[in-house]
Length: 167
Image 1: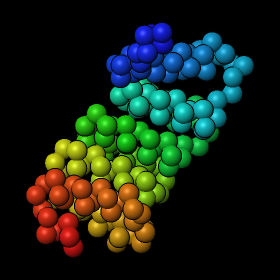
Image 2 (image 1 turned 180 degrees about the horizontal axis):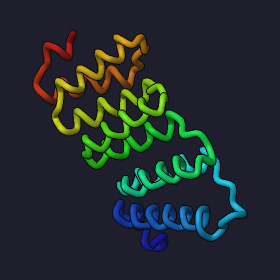
Image 3 (image 1 turned 180 degrees about the vertical axis):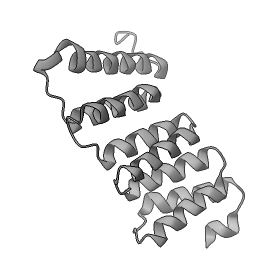
């Protein structure tokens, strides 16, 4: 391919990425067995990899594995990764379920977690629910970042609410 000055297509890259995620997951959790001590970082990397290739059920399995084995404490990063992953594939109910589970486990969401929920809702044209989440961010005393504001403004504009976006 290089000799012809051709690059891989996005589909080719996705296939390669998927194979590497599966290979990494298999090696970490099956091949090494008891010799490999998984920590939160390795679990989060694997969960994120599954989300990036839109295989969120596998990311959820990683989360369940972490909960079952309690080898490490599940943190806000793990939950946010899975919530965002469900957003990528448009699974609002599953993202909300993970968000609610996070609260039940006593883990406080971060601004990034709220951003993921806002993005999930806008992707499915739930503008009003996304605004409610944004208002919750403010009500709970979180400081929205530029990503938060960009999500809200973009979502309102796409929904045709230009006046509200300007506010």
